Image 1 (cartoon, helix red, strand yellow):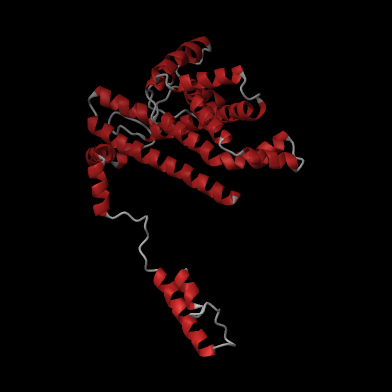
Image 2: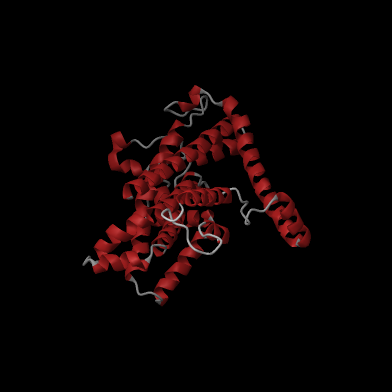
Length: 338
């Protein structure tokens, strides 16, 4: 800055103007521009070279050790994931056959198509029950319930505790309540209700965290414009919390698709599609098996291990497609909101 200032002034300290000395003024202006352009080539002081980083690690061995642990943990995680997926694909893809996608299951074709249809039906029914309940419960706890209330804190602690309960406990509860007490038997409805109860705490807690992450200025702006609480929540808060809410739905979706233990006690293992066309709503009380239960059953029998590997490939692809579809939907909703 001093050089630039001296270039624009003479040796006597007076500022050079075009009227006083046009030629020298233009020369000094060109020199000032050269100084400005050359400043772009100066190396930034916050750039750390590899040698400087290694010298820092020598002075602080603990930082290098932590870097090694983090890198090793990331490498082990990626390697384990690739090994698992690769093992499933290598053992399952060669045994995929068109006969495994027949509409009717037999001991010869070991078709997984009834299990695929039942998986979509079971997941859809459980989410239809769990998502509205979890969403409205979270809205009440965040937007309507008094902050710091003991009841709210108790509900949150209970929901967090229910997330860690093993799925076999939910299966026993579903068997005792839905199957036995309600008299529904091993049925599609019993399994869907059990899965809905199992994923309800996940949806409620993730939705609650997404709502609490929305700044209070959004709510204050809605109130300042004269909107009521319901309109403020619907128009200002919920659109901003959609990505977090859909994240919870994705977690619930993955847990429903891969669940086995709870459905063994509530939905059964019958390899058939409920006959909604012939029985109507009473088909909800038919026993069925999902894709995860189908894979578990084939592996436990020991007679169709190769078909079990093939089923695992389809299950893996199904989970990836469902998660990708939910993420695309979340991105489109985010873009439409903007």
